[in-house]
Image (cartoon, rainbow, N blue to C red; front, side):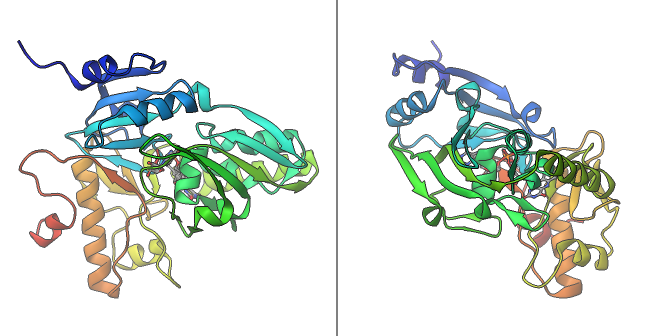
Length: 321
Ligand SMILES: Cc1cc2nc3c(=O)[nH]c(=O)nc-3n(C[C@H](O)[C@H](O)[C@H](O)COP(=O)(O)OP(=O)(O)OC[C@H]3O[C@@H](n4cnc5c(N)ncnc54)[C@H](O)[C@@H]3O)c2cc1C
């Protein structure tokens, strides 16, 4: 008799679980790049209490990763061992929580926060119109654009830790800096409060449409991409360094450096995660050779490569193209 799969054995140990556990879910369908292997188990918690119950009972050796809208994520081809958590309907509310203040679930897309703020004539959140992630991802990445970032507008967040304990975090506790959050990597945000100021709904809608037009004109937003691949180094632009290193349009298989914005990698057909990661490492190596600057990945890379395939910097060190 074969051993039960992980989702079945977890369900057997969690009789009061209300969320859904599913084995072997294809993560390519849940990320912008549309590449990568399956999650061993995908868990969709019913709400924050259900998430806390699950984490408290999950054996500590089982790895956990929380997925947002997959807009900053490269899932490797052999998939992700352990549990991938995806927040859904139980984390999708938006409500007023004070003057020019909104309480928002971590699964809410950033663009919906921007729209809700416009509807309530709350100014300061229009920049979220252009960021295709969720509130959970915005907190983790300190997402920002057009001169503003999450740390300018968030005032409080709630999270569940790996042991299932709930925490309320003030802005200072989040330790947000450029594309970084200091909260332990395995804590899962469940909601946050955002503070704006008094605004005019028509003006906010105009700003949002300017943001959308800018994106359309300057970024390959209709393609399968992960947004900015590398962080901007201090006092430099990653895209300029990539351009100077001659990488615009560079291709490995169906993975390509966008011609439109060369800090974006795109899946231009049937690229694998390995093609994309290899291309990213090749860009890093060429930029290092030309400028001396070592670019740091902004995109989160997750899971395992195909057996026997070196990934990441090992590829470049091995002298692959
Ligand atoms: C076309 C395009 C344009 C983009 N433009 C911008 C931009 O202008 N500015 C910008 O900052 N980013 C931009 N991005 C990148 C991306 O949208 C942001 O980083 C976004 O915040 C990621 O959110 P997500 O929900 O998609 O997270 P995912 O990509 O799913 O995950 C990213 C990280 O967030 C973590 N995470 C997700 N949810 C939670 C949670 N509930 N609790 C704890 N951690 C969580 C994940 O574990 C992972 O570490 C762009 C991406 C694309 C594809």
